[in-house]
Structure formats: structure tokens, C-alpha cells
Amino acid sequence: MTDPWVALKPGADPAEHVRVLRRAHETFTVAGTVPRPVRSVVADSWRRSARAGVGPDGTASVELTDGDLGAYRAEHPLARVMPLFRELLGTFAADGEHLLAVCDAHGRLLWVEGHAATRRRADRMNFVPGARWSESAVGTNAPGTAVAVDRPVQVFAAEHFIRQVQPWTCAAAPVHDPRTGRILGAVDITGGDGLAHPHSLGFVRAVARAAEAQLALLPPPRPEEVPSLNALGRDEAELSLDGRRIRLSRRHSEILVLLSRHPEGLSGDELLCALYAEESVTPVTLRAELARLRRLLGPGLLASRPYRLTTVVESDATVVERRLETGALTAATEGYTGPLLPGSQAPAIVRLRERLAGGLRTALITHGDPDLLADWAHAPWGEDDLEVWRALSAVRPTAPVRARLAALETELAAPAHRAAARVHGATYSQRPLA
Figure 1 (cartoon, rainbow, N blue to C red):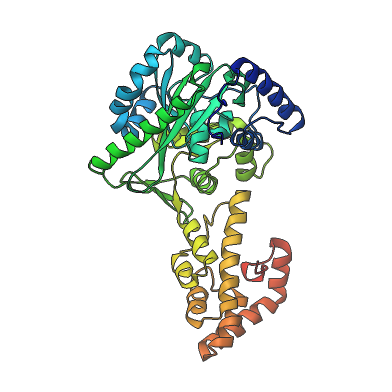
Figure 2: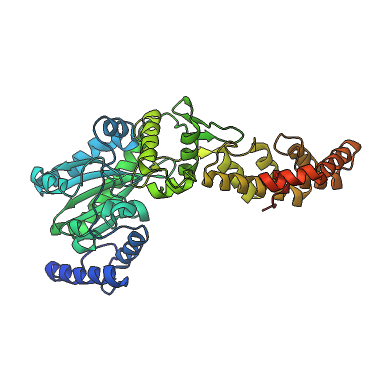
């Protein structure tokens, strides 16, 4: 049986197969259908590329340069096995007019080395260190697709999604942390049609396994601190990053909360709509805020096109949501230290704040645990929550609880309160539970 991960069948004519693939690629870009004989791994990748909004005439964007690039790759785990990559693949790449490339888990190229003339050709399509070659950025390509599917992959000529890359052939294999199993990145060999051979795929697979074996023998690096974002019950979030505690401005707090929830990234237009209720705010204003935030965070954490975080940032709001979804109501209540960025008027933050608070209080009322209801009712955000006080009175009808409930009902029935509600909008305690 033919290996579906190898680009060319034994005895196939490369030139004829290129012509077939180009016709198939044109059919897909026009009609959205994938004709035979496109391999299933390529067809699936084309569809993911199209869903991600990649165009066939696009190009890679360079995200890290100069000092930022140097600092990022010096700290990357794959830096420890670069000597091995060079020893095993470097000479092969240089002698065969190929390139050795290594990317991170986001498809960002960290190193591109090899034959000088081939490098100059690759420079013209931004196949350079610091450029993002993930599937979601430039479509089907060996390093990006290998990371996306967590498999060694060979991509031949017009199997590439972007036309500019179709003269090239490449093979890549993911490299994993031997202790945790997570993907660290991929090692890739890129060049001409001669790489469309089972040996090149087997070669990079073997090199990746050798790198994992070497990483297993090296002493583990210092434990990484997962960046965390505390945004509940405070107008200015606090970010814990690399041993630092960074107090963020209100706008930077909003941006980080949104990006931490969208690891795939958000476009500039999406962020504008999420952050600003006024239509008059221009993209220039947003770009200025993001530039200031990037300087504050340091190199490599905030990427663009789309705007996204290059590492997982765990927010306290997400932790509460996750606990609530799994039914861990007590843990969710303990983790809820107040409304999400309570002073924020950003439309997306308001929706998140109300959804989290509404979901938690609905679960408390439904569950009817007197202690949990009391904790919410006596917190600053629950002291006027009529529905919670009613639920608490039903399960703990003590004199103080009944007295507080009666006072709330009297207050809400007052004509002045009703008039204020009509002018200013319903109070929190009158909002729907969901």
C-alpha cells in the first residue's frame, strides 16, 4: 500500500504530477472542491488553510527580527539541539542545495540555514528566521503542516497552498518535549523536486527522533512559569510573567483578557469592535496601544497578523469558567474574586463579565447550597442580588437573611427605585440569570 505521507508514488513522473496538482489547486481555489489524485493529508490541509482565510497569492509575514529574534530563539528549547540538527542535516542541505529550517510550535521559523544561493531564493518568499509559516498564516507547507497535524509530512510542489511556494518541495517532522510530550516545533528540509522521495521524509523523521533522544539525556531546564493574568475584581489586571508582576492599564488589561481567550488570534478589526463602542476610534489608536503593550511585555510574547499571544496565558476568569463547566461549583466560587474588570465598558469585556457572573449565580441558585449562596450574598457584588437572597432565604431562613430579603424587596418596590431603573437601566439583581 502506498504511504499517504509520501508525496510521489514510485515511478511517478514529477513533471506530470506537478501539472496535475496545479490543475487541482486551481479547481480548489475556484470551486472549493479537491479533485483526485490530491492526497488526503494535502486536501485536508487546503481546507484548513481556506477556513483560516489564507489566500493563494499571500505571503509570509516576518514577526521577529534582530534582538527580539535572538532573545526568543536563545531561550527556546530547540536551541539545545541545534548543533545536532546542523551535524545531521547541515552538510546534506548545503551539498544538495537545500535548506535546513527549524520552527517553533506556532510555525514561526527560528533558524534557516544551508546553501547560499538557495537561501537567497527563499528570502524572496520570506522563508527567513522570524517569519510565521504556520498553516493558518501561509497555508499548506511542511513545517507548518507538520506542527498542525503532529506528524512527519512531505509537501511537493503545487501541493503548497500559496502559489509563490509551489516551486519548492519540503519535508518536516515535529519534535516533542520527551518529558511532557508537547510539541516544541519541527525540523524541516526544503529544496527542489529531488526531495520528493521517501528517503527525505524518513531522514527528517529520524533527525527529529534523535533530537528528542538527546533532549531526554540533557538536564531539564528550569521549570517554566506559566504566565497568569488576574483580572477578576480589579479594574487593572496584573500579569505574572518571568518572575515579574506587571500592573496593566485598563486598556492593556482588556486586550490581554481577550487575547488570552483567543489563542488563534484576533484581527485588528475584531479587536476594534471588541474594545471600542465608538465607531469613530481609528485603527491607528489601537496600533499605538498594542505597540505600547508589546514594549511593556518584552520580546516575543505579542505577535501580529492576527494579534495573538505566542504562549498560553492562564487568566483567573478562564479558571473559574473551566471549573464551572466541569461542575466544580465550590472551586469556581472560591476562585471568583469579583466581576471581570468591573470598570471596563469594552463591549466584549462587558459580555464576558455578565456571562461569567450570570452563569455562576445561576448555578448557585440551582444548586441551592446555603454556604455557597451566603458567600455570594455577602460579597460586595452580591449584597443587592435579590434572586440570590431569595434562594438563600429558601434554604437558610434565619432572621438576618429574612430581614435583608425584606429590605431588598421594599427597596426595589419603591417608586423612586423604579424610576431610576427606567432611566439608568436595571440593577444587577434584576438582570436575567443567563
